[in-house]
Amino acid sequence: MAIVSGNPIDAGPSSSSQPGTAYPTDGSLESIRLLGTPVACATYDSALERIKALAREPRATAVCPSNTHILGEGRHNPEFARTLARFDLVLPDGMPVVWALNFRGAGLKDRVYGPYFMRHALRNTPRPWRHFFFGDSEECLVELRRVLVQLQPDIEIVGMLSPPFRPFSEADEASFADTINRADPDFVWVALPGVRMERWIIENQARYRRGVFLAVGDAFTLLSGRQSFAPPWMQRMGLTWAYRLSKEPLRLGPRYLRYHSMFVSYWLWDVLRGRVGKKVRPTI
Image (cartoon, rainbow, N blue to C red; front, side):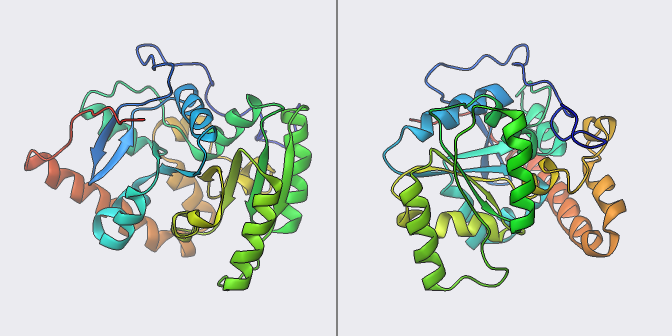
């Protein structure tokens, strides 16, 4: 059902598996090291199987879609690199990341874009799978719930929490953990600003008994229809950043210039030095 022009439910790539990228039934995925971070050679379907496997773990686990910003920051900042290293799964969120993976033979046809992956996962995890949504404003969460119920009428939303728009205190963190642990979700979808999101997930894992914590950035805003997706042709050409830049040039311009150039320069340096990684199979 269409919700708004540029429909957040129906827009985007097909969720079907890509030819030539069959994945094992245990959910394990090959990865290639980019700028020091292992990035999974994943499709929407194989990533979904992997997070289902992670949801069965008796511990909190973490998933991070990676774009040029995330990988550039990880290479440039050793502290953030240690944060990325603790994620159970790092997905290729941006087309430049896919092109870099394909340079080493990944054979991917598309990225695993965080908002589309969230939509794909929610469509394909009806009850008894349990979902919790953490982040953004209360108004956004109300609108998101309305859209998600149309997307998957049999969805089980066990909680939604809009945290305060300020640094979180220890009391805040204890309250979040109590609320989420009581809800006992399989998947916790997290939407916080910038790299604060990835840091929050990893720094607080010990507070949580179980569940897959997924860093999905602006997915709540996009899927609720409060912001529009880039046109499909721009996404295919790796120009999502240009579309977003046209909407918020003052805020995003300096960030995109810094991290796009950082990603390209580090990647070229690795290629020239023969340091671009090969495929590896992680242990489960």
